[in-house]
Image 1 (cartoon, one colour):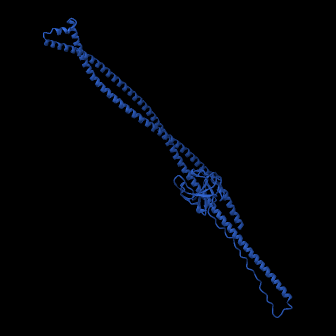
Image 2 (cartoon, rainbow, N blue to C red):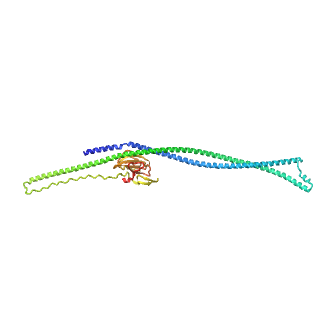
Image 3 (spheres, rainbow, N blue to C red):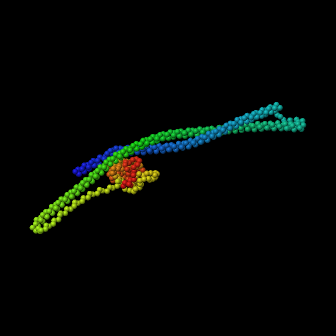
Length: 480
């Protein structure tokens, strides 16, 4: 009856162990594939966003350079306009001076004309008088010395007047010519300067217009890049939301696998209990058999002793004395005490997953990127060192996951409690999602993938299922 019960239990366990590892493994693999595709999409979107940001930065630099050039052009234009205004003021002042000079010229021309008329009249008088005036005759015609002195003074006055008129006439004509030349030269020079400044202003204005066109083009390009960057950022947000949804699905799948692992653990415990009960039954049966054998042996011994007594009684009947010989009672040995083997002592909950040196513990640390919380144990060893499953369970994730690099997540059920263990930065993964693994089974090789400073295993223990926030991580050292 016991053997039949044990065969039935073992058959049930074997059937369950065949069915459990293959339960919905394809679903989890599809989720992991979707998550990897989403992570790849996020990586491409981040690269595109960084590229657009770089182009925007370059455009900002170009815009700043153009703005500086335009500012310089504006300064030059303002300086040129100021120079033009100064020249224009000089021209206006020169025109005022020209107006004054024109008045002076008119006055000079009037004086010259008057002198010309006077000289013409003197010339006409000379012609009427015979062609010349003999000043000696005037002097010799004096009636007295006083008259001579008067005549001499008058003649000198006339002669000096004529000379003065001629000198003034010549000087005025020369001054008139100089003033006209000066005014015309100064005005022409100023007009030329103004024309040059106007040309410079036009050139600067053209450059400013050209630079403004560059600015407009760059601003348009900037707007286009900003729009494209915004679109990529929106897509990245959508991808992140999708990734979060996939993470939730993976967690749900972990919960499902944890339930499977729990049932398997319960079945294993039932199997252990059944084996223990069967062992106890077998031990009890063996003890009963030994007791029965001992009883049979005692009975046989008593029978042999009885037969011997009877034979002795027959041979000694004739020589029987008055007192009967004493016959000792047969000695029955006590049944052998049967001791059952003690149950093996329970070992640690998890085994150490890899050999090597503990390089970074659980808690706060800084590896060069600022203070951070390290939610696992780092065990350093050379690339390719085998990594073992810390406990029996199921593979709930196997693939690349951002900073973890190549990572395997196992789901366990131990003594009615679910756990998750994480094995990060692997150089190779040797298991697949949904696969059942036993404690000590190889799940991958030590590497330095993801956010890593060298070849090592990043090992985490979580009470319950793993989640993206790793809110239930505990120090693995407490479980070895």
